[in-house]
Structures are given as structure tokens and as C-alpha cells.
Length: 184
Image (cartoon, rainbow, N blue to C red):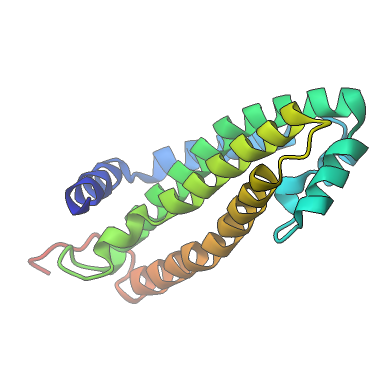
């Protein structure tokens, strides 16, 4: 597993360029800005509510209505694209900042892959929410609990991810946002 993390980490460091990060951020803003769904329906989405119970999940899926459930499936399928973009953006931004802040021998260096864990929880969340919608009117409790655990995991991962960005920004600022290497 360590070897996989090292390979992924190196892959992100090799591609951590300001232009790539900017393009991903523009793509992310563009996707979020698309008027692809009813705003009221989106505001009821389970993926915006960490810590919901199974009963709350079933109530939400029922409240979507027939047309809303169909639309929510497409929203969650489309969310796979968005989460791939923002996960890559977080990994690349962390990598770019860490290149400016730390030498590769620093113990924090490989944490540039941590946003992948947040993305993993988001993928699971979408899978379980889609499964809940497709199962309606059945109420599969294990699926509902897996959905809420995944949603909560996604939100909890935001804390260390934002923490890494803050640490990277402060470290990069201390070093004048100059690329660091083992020789510096």
C-alpha cells in the first residue's frame, strides 16, 4: 500500500502546475454553475446533510417524488465528474503548495494524497444514495447507514484537507513561494 501512495504522490507532484490547478478550478466552478437541476430539489439532497439517520434518508427519498428521484439519480451520476475534478484540484493544490513549503524528505510530503480519501467517501456516498433511490419504495437500512457514514466521512475529511492547505500555504509563504528541493 505504501508503494501505491508513493506512486500516486509522485504522480500528483509531477503534474502540480499552477495552470493545471487553475483549469481544474475553472472547470469546477463551471460545473457547479450549470443550471442542471431544480434548486429546491438540490437543497433537499442527502449529500448536503452529514449525520442523517436511516429514517431521514428514506423520508428524503420519498419527498423527492417520482420525477425528483429520476433527477436525483442524474445529479449524483454527474457528481462523479465534479468530485473527480475537485479531488484532483485538492491533491494538485496541496502538492504545489508542499513543493514550495517543504523538502521532499519532510514527513508531510506524502500527505498530498489525503484528498483522495475524501473523494473516496464522496464516491461511496453517491453509490449508496443512488442505491437508496433505485430501491424505493423499499427501505434497505444497511444501505441508508452506509450512505450516512459515507456522507459524514466526506465532511469529516474536509477538516484535514483544509488543514493541509493552510499548512502548505503558510509554509510556502515562509519560503517565499519558491520551489524547494533537498539541496535548499
